[in-house]
Image (cartoon, rainbow, N blue to C red; front, side):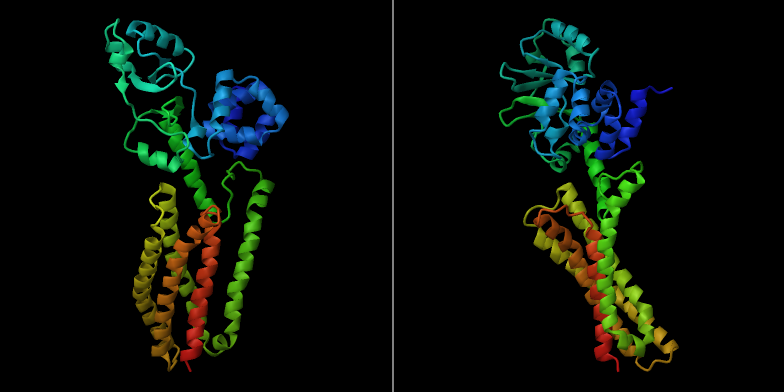
Length: 400
């Protein structure tokens, strides 16, 4: 049977920061402290920020002083940076220590913490080398650590964004990475699993953000809180739908004269919408993985515009043939012109959709907003208005 702290950990792990804070505020300070110490360091600090002062203080009294200091130090770095994920470096030794003494010290430390590597620093705390446990065990008892350590080990900068850090470590496959200041001072450690967990949470949240679901919402989020998260975006979406409906209403006379046009409105909206979503997905992926460098924006927009043009022309041929056949089946004498209208409208709509899919997240980022936030809602509006407006406008002008 699970203890109270274990059950609490399960509940907190499935909740966003705000809901997790509510759960911990209702628990004892000791149980809250146990749970916080088992969470991803970044998640733990976000939960602490959401907690009320009194329960937060009660919980922190049960957190070891060195860990509490490490968390305080982590918050000095930008959020979503490597610094927020740092753990306290435990196995830290001097270069002149002997292998025999170090092994004895590691045995003592292993009872308190999980140790993967040892770290060799000078008196100022600068990282000199990394100590692999296998090398330590095989070394002569009187050997000095400076002769056993791995010199100039790979390390991370605490202010580095998680995306950039992931790109640097993806081919390293080390279980733990030291984090050092620009002066080489050892500030902490980041576990590879923790790093990828933190980024996985951000990436998984992007899908929801595209349609107005907050990053903090989880399966365990209470009904009313989920409603408060989602409803405002649905109201915004409703307004954008009215905009699209207004465009269709402008061409009411054309639709009344050529009823068969109504059958192809969903076709145009669907195809142009998919084109835009493809461009949006590629753009957001490039931002997330750090592939989209400053200066690459123009090349991306041009590429997505050209893809929209080529895809629109090819899909437009199929759609135009379909419209022509449908018009002939309805004995419409303007079947050829209607097919041409569909082809032109499809081509133009896909071009605009491709451009919108790339430009919307770029503009959101430029104005300091999350590029993933409700971008799909704005994209859908743009594609619907352009595709329907172009289609009905051309039909009004060209079909007698």
